[in-house]
Image (cartoon, rainbow, N blue to C red; front, side, top):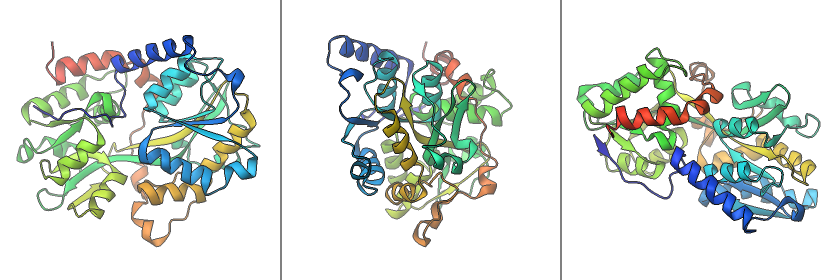
Length: 363
């Protein structure tokens, strides 16, 4: 088994990291380092940092003139999405953010903990244009999540050194021994494991088929453990790997940089959203609803697509010719994995233990 080193850009969440982050958030709140909602004088947007935060600001605040149109004063809180989730959980009732960007699994976790408020149909009319696979709602709360872009986790391959794959199972080919990679559980491996598990006949409640298959891939076919997106990019650029489950947008970025790669939307590819939730207890609820509606506007979503090459989530979005290649065909979306986010959260810790013991061989 080969394993790449870790990096600060890892956006994943492990059990230890989540517990540590939650503890740190509680200490910060109790010590007064995190402001309470009583003093909520600015509209605060929480998201991942770096270029992603810049894209959120440009696409949803600056270009649509959100502050001017709604007489708002916006501030930004940049951190790992897992850290933002831990702070929201630790500060229930006195939110430290107004809205926060997350994937579906963390959004479900926050909703189940009673940390969110529902979208208003009157103030978020653009919600109706988001496909059901990229929205979340629950009885008693209603709709509370809609994606502004969606990230496809498919199969990226080197067009000069590998044959066009037809399934994730191509990763197990002996011809690619030591030249494939899989995502670390604490990054997006948790979701890919569940998708592969379904390919091998498992369910969210029975992870054994997937665990056994991935253990064989890592231990017998010498798959590299890919800790984060930056490492994945470098592995492909240096041609240390010829195939790996990877992001659609990042694959297009590799192509733009001259790396000979292509993307195949194989069965059980994963459609993951990036969407904003509204934090329960905010004193700026109406403004939060308006902001969410801006993120679901097709024109604003295309601005994010220009920056990151991830497709817009809105059905109304019309991609210009130079972005047409990022579109995911409907027939490909039809074969994406159907994942139960709540069950994934319920089994997160137990399956991490099994991953560490059976896949990584740690005692």
